Image 1 (cartoon, rainbow, N blue to C red):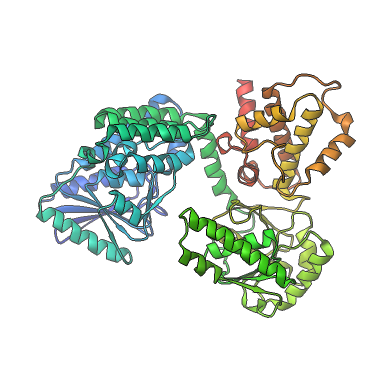
Image 2: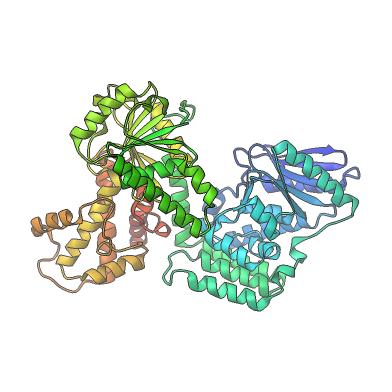
Length: 622
């Protein structure tokens, strides 16, 4: 067994370094190693305090997700969470001050471990959070009980029902952290050692479970829980947010041990739910999507320091904003000065709305706007590392532009097209540099939609694919590598969704009934409520349905149930997905699930159309 924890005594302080690369996830053997090291420090007469810190770039980024996959019965779930509670309780019961020194991230079980320590000190760029809800879970090792005792129930509700991490300064202000430190990991260690000696000199031990000041206003806590419960969708497929509210409510109303017992029960409910299984499937599908044939983990990648976007329309402007949001300067080119001025105003207005809602400061807006350079010429394109073409879907225009780009950009510059219609190999041939050409298919609005389909041409170099995957992650997006097919994967799947809806309309269902059935299923909108379905021409699809009326499944119109609507449309999606796989446009069923969930809102708690169809078939067979 690996050591998982290194033990070192420095002038009376035991430094326990958690070492489970790459993110120090809490997996088999890790907690045992931590607990043994804590016990060793407590027993050592030369040790006055303990500091827990992560090796590498982070503290502890959560639990090993495979643990949740392995829980198949309620008894296993209850036993597992009871063990975690007991181990954290023993750390909290240590008779010498235990300080968690946090750099990088303390997420999920990592934050729960830190809260079991007596104090928490963090680097100023660290982030803490309870993201379990994103996997259909709640914190299962005391997080719903300790967190509201540190930051109060309102913030705890935000963190446990939303799943988003909190920056160190906010965590300090709320009480989650006791101190933050500027500088690198070594500065953090030095500050943690000094902090530990201070606490030891004063004989101070402050156990989180004993704190009650943040829970004093019971009525306010009840109101906060009720408001958060009411704010959730009335029909939700993921029970975890409701379970988190109930657990945090218990923290406010019950003693620590009783609240912890309820947390364990609620965690067991969640971990065995269909929603959690589906969300865990998507978690691993995203990991698999990063594995691309012919592109190894050590494939070299290119540094993207400056970008260019061709086309100052809605799509091009959105892509430009996506780059500058990630801190990458961008040239925005169009042949029309008026179009450039118009789009710059549009980008500024969208940023100003972020100022009004408090997500950006005016100064931050000006810094971002300064990163965009509008231009009508290709003069500076030899200084950029990637060009993204976002022009009208006209093959002659695009091939002409790629021929120009092949000459105007330097060797090694990535040449990306947003086309979902034309084969990137045609553009690659026009450029004269096929190894550098790739497709980056964005969805509108580009700066908010999370998916980018990375279209690999026959001649696209492996380092260009690897660079694209790395860049997409830097842009805060999810990338899936696909092969060429008309409309690519997302639009093609969405076309089958709309087409089946129109068939159902022809067979007797009403538009309102179809939309209602699908939104109740979890789609953000039904097909008839969408004005623009990811650039698919809905009228064209309906015309195709009319032209092929003989393919209707019912010869006569009649009553159609909501269950039939959902079953028909999900079956159509899975069938189209099977064709996509057979044609080689997608590599794995999980890739299609990711594309559908992030591309047009297939409910994540259903796992994607391929997972859902497979699961439904198993359920039916059973």
